[in-house]
Length: 137
Image 1 (cartoon, rainbow, N blue to C red):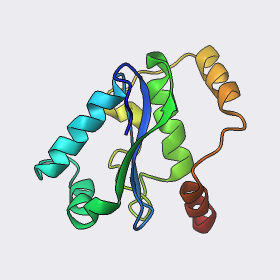
Image 2: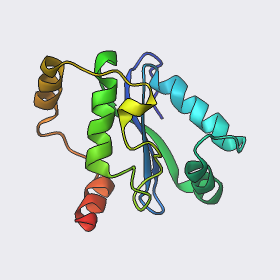
Image 3: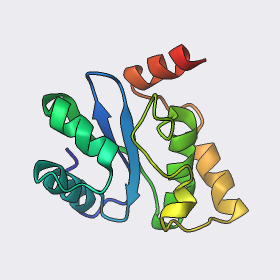
Image 4: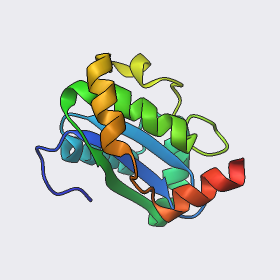
């Protein structure tokens, strides 16, 4: 679990049992993950797919920071992770919205996108995510 309350970035809720995931972004990742956990524990999460998964596999669910990034890049980076993980496809994930920009994210300038793209070159994904992407192709 993320410990620093001031981190803005992209987080993952990962089901180790079936490799499905939920990707989200927040200006306060720690606080947002606590909200997810509280809602899931109280059976009140807005995402019914994630709630059902938690109810069935709660011992296999991990909550982690995936990528720290500046606030102005959150939507772009969330979309980047949507695209490479396939988390909006019910077969692979729990995200309902197909676009990070539908969930209140901000659009980023071309200059910021280029900086983000350069920064992410050579970044490694978790082994489980790489395997899932490999199996889906």
